[in-house]
Length: 214
Image (cartoon, rainbow, N blue to C red; front, side, top):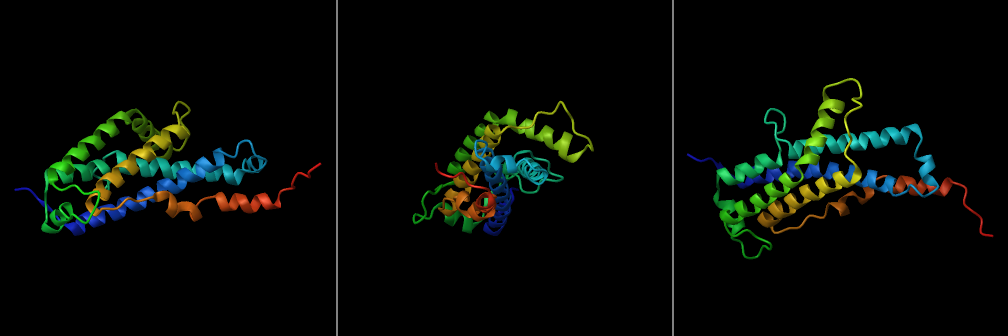
């Protein structure tokens, strides 16, 4: 007999996944912002030990949290995209979820479980397209952040472009699955503006000697 997923369970899944995605988006925005300052005077200041360690921490958060969402290890990863996708395919939905699916006031909306499965197949296809990058972050986590005390020189860290592609992947998942159930589109960038290093850099910039106009 198939299990039944309740709306409360679905809410809890998406609440936890939202927190993980928020962590990733904040850390990604910090790394991206610092990288884009390379041609500015402040960038030299950002090469001090504190900021080097800060960038290391941001990459650490990105890798660990992406692994939670994109690499399914049932003993440790309780809130995983692949796990949720499988649950939504294999199990039945309670009456409250079915009501969401067919609520004409919500848009976008699925309308049926078949539409859910159709969208999940699209998401799984996109995950496969990014599998090489996912494997790379898994190796980084295992070789650098999780199981060793020394840096493995042969391990290649994911670059910003690769990280960005995985960020877009998890946002695609969230807005297409959560969005179609609840009729909402979540813009994670709005929620992280005041949680990034941007304001810190702005304050430091005020203290740097300014060029005098000739």
